[in-house]
Amino acid sequence: MERCAEWERKTRETAVAVRLQLEGSGTAEIATGIGFFDHLLDALCRHAGLDLSVKTTGDLEVDGHHTVEDTGIVLGKAFDAALGDRSGIRRFGYACCPLDEALVRAVVDISGRGGFYFTTVLPLAQVGAFAGELLPEFFRALALNGHFTLHLDLLKGENQHHLQEAAMKAFAIAWREAVMVQAAQRGVPSTKGTLR
Image 1: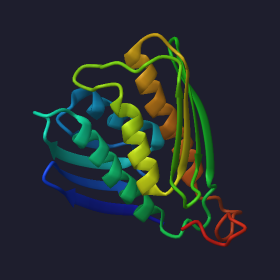
Image 2 (image 1 turned 180 degrees about the vertical axis):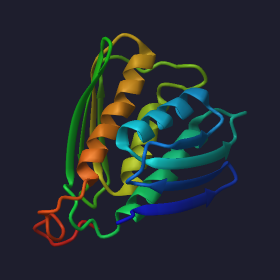
Image 3 (image 1 turned 120 degrees about the vertical axis):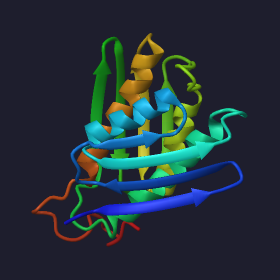
C-alpha cells in the first residue's frame, strides 16, 4: 500500500508545493530559503522514514513567519490526504528524543481533530535565520491542518540548535509510530468508527 500525497498553496505571501510518501527511505528535497528550517525538515524525513519534497518561496524580506507557517499548513494537508481513511493505523505514537543535553517528548494521536499543546523549559531563540518562536508555529499549523493532536514538551536543554532539532526528531519518531499500519488492526482504531 502506497500512502502518497501532493499539495500546493499559493497566496500573496508564499507559494508552497509538497510531495510526500509516508513509507519512504528518508529521502528529502527541501528548499524553503531558511537553512535551519531545511535542516529540521530533513531530520523529519530521516527519522519518520518519509520521502518528502518541499519547495517554498516566501516573503523572507519581511521575515520567516509566513514561509514557516504556510509550509506547516501545506505539509499538514498532505499528511492528512496521504493517511486516507486511516484504516489499520496504530493511531498513537510516543517518543522521547535526546540530543546531547537536550531532551524532548512528543506524543501524537491521529484523532481526526487538530490540536497542539506545547511547553518549553526556556524561550526559543534564533538559530541561523530561523526565529525560535516559529518552531511552535510550524507544529501548530501542521497539527491543525493534518487533523491530529500533538503534545510537544521541551523538557531540558541549553543549546538552541540541540533543543529545536530534538523537537523535530521526537515528533518524527512519534509520527512514524502513529501512522504505522498493523496487520492485526482491522478497520479504524476508534469507537466512533471514523478518524476523519
